[in-house]
Amino acid sequence: MKIELKRITHNSRLSDETPAYAADVWVDGIKRGTTQNDGHGGQDLISPHDLERQLNEYAATLPPIESYGMVLTQNADMLLQGLLDRHLEGKRLKRLMSQKVVFVRDGKVWCGPIRPGPASPSAFVVLNDKPFDEALDLFLAHGQVG
Image (tube, rainbow, N blue to C red; front, top):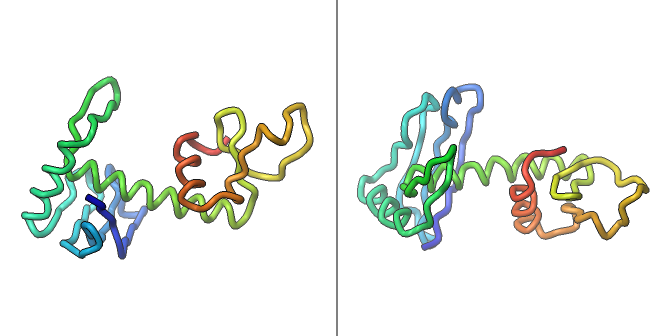
């Protein structure tokens, strides 16, 4: 099952405990409904209810997530929040890559000019040279910019 969020609107100023956003939910290339969150810590509102049920059933088949020492069974809310997080981090990476060279070195993401130093150039993985989805995967895997 391929789940996508499209027509995402996000407002960080309205986000308190959770991201304030609205989006269309597409499943296997077909628009199936919408989701939204007011940003005050509640769960996503998914419409229609049948879509929420289908997403919960699918999420339950995914591996559990470890968070703060707990093992959590995935649900529709976690699934959609993960897609939103990837979208927001993708926008952040595009902005960084338009202004600087972004690269992975020693397991961390860095940005700026690559200067000669003790490490060989092969120790760098320049994200600007990668296809965007691959660059985003590397960016997310190596955490925040150093």
